[in-house]
Image 1 (tube, rainbow, N blue to C red):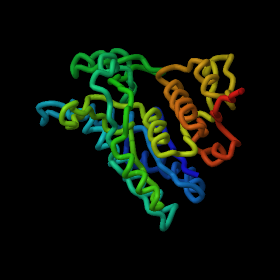
Image 2 (tube, helix red, strand yellow; image 1 turned 90 degrees about the vertical axis):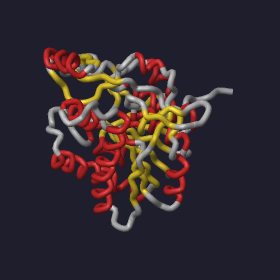
Image 3 (tube, one colour; image 1 turned 135 degrees about the vertical axis):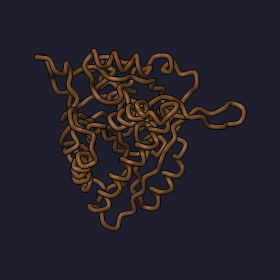
Image 4 (cartoon, rainbow, N blue to C red; image 1 turned 120 degrees about the vertical axis):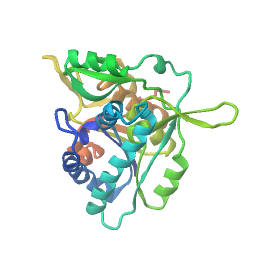
Length: 307
């Protein structure tokens, strides 16, 4: 079976953790353990978030007195793909001896007229108190918004239209290679209508929506979205909280999950299942193997059709 796995950014850095290499390595050791059993039995394509990492790089770039201007987000996104991909590849190499593993820096085409460029809403970087966030916004020209535990920078998040390296990923998969790609949703680029020339854009694409598109293009059987909760919950964090263990795309969308937490994951799962007839699941990293075998997480399955 061909499985596209989307790792949440919290798989590498949990809330409140210092963004140090040793911390990320310890978390990636847990990722490798969780995915090893799946990789022994199935073809795996691995994608990952980069919110904490790109936010850190952006803050460092903006504060660097040696730069005349901060490094643009699309280049910082490419840096995070290399860094996180290297950590993942080396650790997976140790638990999957003999398995070819490659990290591929991936570019994702977006529309230059996407409305998201005018409405920054994607959280990146660390959480700040309101007063500190306001100072940074004025000093660095950031947009900031309130997250669940404080204030964070927000950037445009245009919709993914096409992953430019999909054919290469397909060839690598056919050769038995475990591919790490589309990190952070891929490097966002637009194409000139006349020449096709690519231009990097100041944005971060939602990695789950990119994973769904990649899974569709690769004709994957399963989209596995791994996060820090055991399943999808309705009314999460309230006294009325209830687990959602099984749903169709229609049922999942009807529940109206928040745009900056479970919403993109639910939409990504729904799109993949609708467009391919495959299966998707959302749940905890440590239960990845059980999720694929229907023993954990939230399963998203096709709507039943009645003739």
